[in-house]
Image (tube, rainbow, N blue to C red):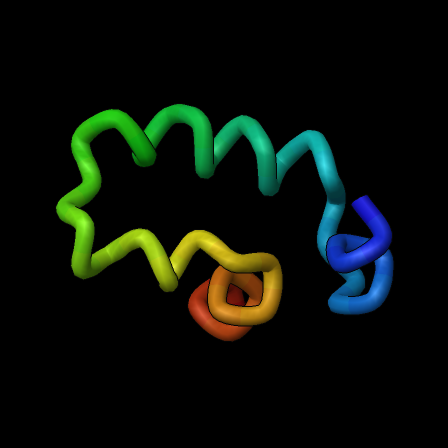
Length: 43
């Protein structure tokens, strides 16, 4: 949650999106779920 605040991310939106997409994600995509990478993709 501290990382979400650091990047100006709504924690609920972040967790909802990550938990929805994570089960179908490939191992090579896991890095894109960090708050920093997630914030870059939301811009």
